[in-house]
Length: 386
Image (cartoon, rainbow, N blue to C red; front, side, top):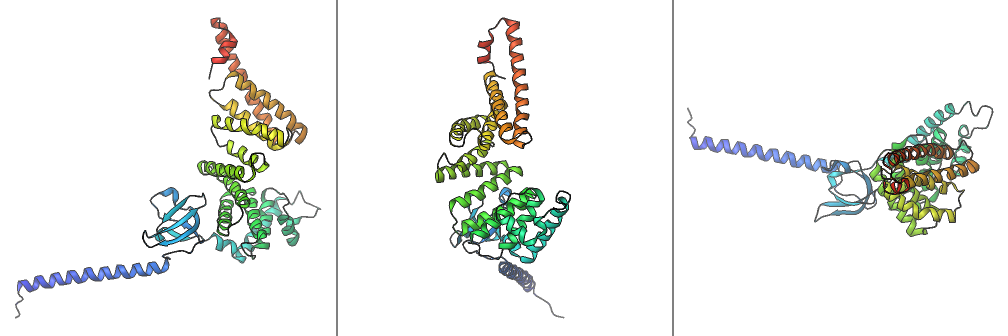
């Protein structure tokens, strides 16, 4: 019988434990190497990426493009997000954004085009009975869509896919391809595929930044992005991008250019009533002088301004009266220029009804207070706030 010395038993135990730990560490290291092989340690400048696995949940899912490759000192990659913000991210918190690959897959594009056409043909079958239908004619559909013709709803969606199908094979720096991607985003937005439109616009802006496109092209896409953010209820992102669009157009084209005025009006719709009134008081006189009182953008500005006036909880009776008179004039012009059934006309007239009701209610309160206490109505009107 062999007797094992207690110290030797202890040595065997410690040796076995150390060996197990070392084997475990080796397995983890080999697994890490395998994982690293699956996930790139760096990305080339210009690569479109998506942020994942971050503690700041709001950043997860954000997309952008690499502006600086891996910094060996910090172990991070510089990424410029669609919002314009630049962040430094660890490689494990990035993944290649696959939208570009999906959009450039011809079989996928063909499939989406055929699906969209089928929906559009069914939706407008009754209206186009006995007439030429462009979306039923493959070549004509592409020509009509890419020529900049204006369509609505699911028809716009089908024609957007038709346009993209035509130019998807072109180089990404070609203007026709960039416009085709913009048309696809616009078509998807019109067809109420807002999330898909957002992805297309984000991809479009990322590509434009990567290839060094002109500022005007990027501002146009940013405007589309801001509108999509707004419709999706992402108001802070919409407001930030609206502000960037307005300042960008102001710097590029000046205060009197229609694109600057258009961007300013949209920006005003996302401001609080005090900020909105201040901005609109500045740009409405410019619009009236440059575009004229009958231009639809001027009419929209005056409509937005009136809503800010009567929507202000601290509005005076004079503010409410100004809102009513402004809307009455705007409604009269809109009905004459655009017709009674135009959405702008009906929208202004609906707001006019609300502003009149608010004015009448406020005046009734003031008159009741003045009558009951022998107070001069004119003096009370100047000091009273809701």
